[in-house]
Image (cartoon, rainbow, N blue to C red):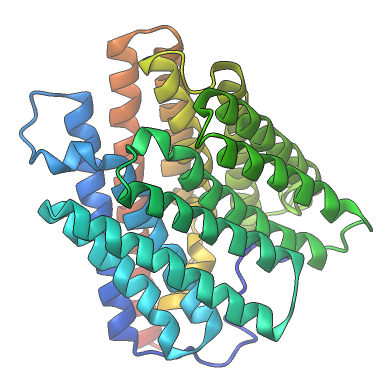
Length: 374
């Protein structure tokens, strides 16, 4: 059974356009955004930690757009197989670097432009084949773009999290829908995901004028998306397998659980019930769900995008276990208003990301050595 959600299939597609060195440079920009975002998060958890003022202030955009947005743009550019598509990850990476350097308005402009270019990539992909899965992902790119325009207009990030969350959720949902079709999805089932995505989009749009009500509606949409994914995703089958399929399925199903938790928190609080509950709602989504998706797909996407092997090894379960334990600790600390507990959860989450990056680097290096020794 296939385990990857992306349009890229390294085994059945011709070589991607664009030099590998250029793609590594784009990935390096995403890595800078990740490290800066992690340090900004550390400064938020431990105010005594020395950090430039921009890093804690831009922690969320650096992680959600600078790091993850650049990765998604890069993968879509590879899928498009046209050189012009690579402008999206280049501009996204530059936007992240501007935020790190303190040029915040330039960073916002570049990240918004990257979202618009990403939407253009999806339109080009739709020109090849119209599919519900690509339309969902286009909706995600447009959510990022709309949120970026509001950001440029002066709206604070706290009022824009719905737009950026919709970008990630719709992107992932579209990708998983593609694999559900491969697994012979029951006729009419895809309409349920479209309805859930529509509910999410309606809530996000409503939040522009009625933030709390919009967040509650969006939360119900998040729960609906989580239920659909948990029921129809091929992960329900592949979790009974072995090796990489089982590993990816564990990450996916655990992530869907956190997506449902996040949706319930959004629906119950409207993201307006105090700092702690707001923190729990955001980190259940962006850490528990989105980062778990990254862990699940990295062994497939990294080779397809960068042409380097990232073989599956059981050691990859270690950062996954740490990540989900960290999210559980952080959410518990937020719900109990226990500062020390939530700080411990935040630090554990940072460790999980760094351990995963370290495991990936070691596995890639060993794979390259093994291939050179043949």
